[in-house]
Structures are given as C-alpha cells and as structure tokens.
Length: 466
Image (cartoon, rainbow, N blue to C red; front, side, top):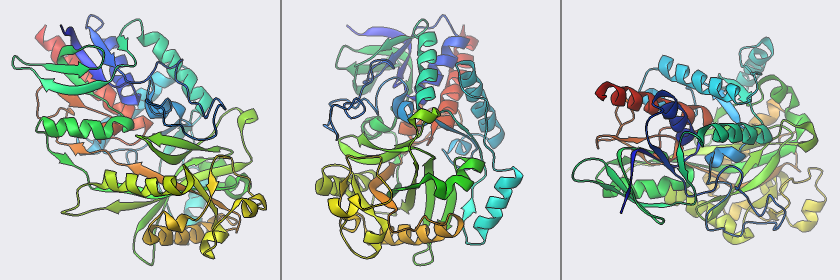
C-alpha cells in the first residue's frame, strides 16, 4: 500500500531544501514528503574526514555527496550573486527574476546564520585586477560573492533543518528506484522502503543522482540534452601567490582561450588557505577543495581548479560517461587521486614519493598518490592547462613554479538537461525538475533559486484551486 502525499520532493540538496522551505512557508497545510537516499545533516559522515582511513572505501551511500544539504553541504559555501555562471536559469526566465530569486535565497541563509560580508568585482582594487589580467588575455568574470565557510555552511544547514523538520516529512536513507506516472494523474515513487503517491512531484536529485534521473526521464519519454563535461586538475600553491587576488575578490573566475587549440580554460572554486579533498561521484574518486572561515582550520596553501570545457557533437551522446572514464584512469593508476609537481609534468618526469618530499609546497591531501598525470588526462587538456598556468603566472607570479602541485582528475559533470517550461515543469503535468542534478543549475545560488521558483509556482497553483 503506497503512502499518499500532496507533494513529493526527491532529494534534499540545496534545490530540494529551498523548495521545501518556501512551499511549507506558503502552504503550511500541505503534506510535503522529502525522499533522500542519504542521512540527515547530523548523521552525515565520511571515514576520510573522521580520520579512519586515508582514501575512499566506496561507501554504499556517499556521506559527502548525499544527505540533507547535498554535495554543497561539505563545500566551502561560495554563494555567487550572478547569472554569468552557476547555472542556466536565464534560459527559462529573465535575468532580473533570477537575481531576485538569488537574493531571496541569500536572505533566507542570513536568517539562519549566514554572513553579511560580500566580496565584489566592482571595487577599485578589483577593477585594477581586471585591467591587469586583460593584459595577458585573462578575463575576470563579474560577480559578487559570499564565502560562508565549510564549517558555517554546515551550521546554517543544521539551523534550516531544525526549522523544516517540524513542517516537512523527511524520509532519510530512502532511495527512489523508479518514477511512475499514475493513470488517474499524479505519480508513484517506487522506493526501497515503501512506495509514495503524490499529486505533484519535484525532482531535485543532485549531482549524485544525475545519471539515475536521466534514466528515469528516458523511461518516461522526456527528451534529454547532454553535450558538455569539464575536465581538469586542482592546483595547489602557497597562499601568498594568490593573496593579492583572493584578498580582493576571494572567488576569482578567470577565463582564458588557449592559443594552441582555441579551447576555453577557467579557474573554478578558489579556496584561499584551503584544503584539497577527495570526492566520490558514483564510485569514481575525483578531487575538490574546501576552505574554512575559522583561521585555526586554515592551511598555508590556496587551491583552485583549472577546467577545460569540452562540448561534443553528434553522434556522441555520453559526455558524462566520458568524464567518468577519464577520472577512472587516475583511480586505476593511484587508487584514488593522483598528484604531480608542475615542473615534473612539464619535463615529462613522473613524480614519486622522494621527489614530492622535496617539494616546497606541502600537499594538504596527504592521501593523494604521486604519479604522472599525462598517463591519465588527454594530451589536449593537459596542453591547455599548462598554457593557462603560464598565463596565470603573469598575474600571480609563482603559479608556474616547479613545486606547484596538480591533483587529478577534477571532473565537473553537467547533468542531462530536459525540456522544461518557464516554470521548470517537465512535459508531464505537475512534474518539476530543479537543481544541479536536473541540469538547470551549477552551484548553491541558482540551485536554491530554482527551488524557490518551483515552490512559488506550486503554491500559486494549489492556492488558486482551493
């Protein structure tokens, strides 16, 4: 016997959390059920973070990717006020509305403990940095940014959870196996711990559920578009190298078009005084970065990703699988994340334990295994990355030092995009798709905004019928 709900939300990452928040606020009488394969915010654990192991042991459900708050819970909490990056919501609504939604999400975060401090690219210092970068064909993307901090991000989410658990019915450790359309209207969620029927369905599967969601959409006859994946490395340098940049804009998004291939390379997820971390994406170990607001938790290094954007044309239709394959090569070679000194890479030398021990830059991800990135990443991407590092060295001298550390592979998967209306509704009535896993967003701000948007649409629809 299936349980009945007015609205079921699949996933409680950033998009699902804010959809739950806004819908419960606007329609407190609704029976809202949230199904999440991971744990609540307090029970989310990772053996690596706990110090029990030094590398990923392939937990059945990844504690860093799944659970209340989603993958963003253990990020360093960069919240970008922009439509220039972080998602594609402007494909469905105008820029003014997207920015209003982003600011509303921020106001909710502030209510639950977020900082008021904002970094900007419009200060005199930032404008000077932009001019200096342009001398070397590096383009600084414009955005305001808040840094919530990894530890503060978790605290904010815990506060939101305490508010929501009295208003929303959460089912944790509950995996949705299949989405079915009911003949009489509405939807049935076939789960490993009992089924749920609902009138309205909001899918917010998050990055870890992206591939599963794509398969569900195919089964329901919803067309998919997926032609991009970003492949690269995470760079780690002494914090002093980028201090004049991170002190001014914190999250500097610098884009460069390589002269050799004409490919676009960009900096991503900059973590001043941060730590490089491993991340499990559906059994594949990739690399990421964190940084803390608490100075006692900081390192002496800054890390950031360098990503090469890859777009594919017909007949190729599996960039997600392609990206996983590239990452799996470094897993095969290193048993997880691979690390190499920049000078060794340029000189065609494999970094080993002895060479790494001589490095002036001490790795913050001690579980990374020294090796040769050229055996894992395609030559084109590596050539692009090397050219970008030399370009960055002109605005941040020291980036191209011999001992600069490169970790691989860092892969950013773009979830399959499906046909959606302006209201983020699929071609199936009452079925909405939001967040990173649905291919509409790429980051905390727009993911939260997509959740708010769908909650507003649903609330207006429900209230107008009552």
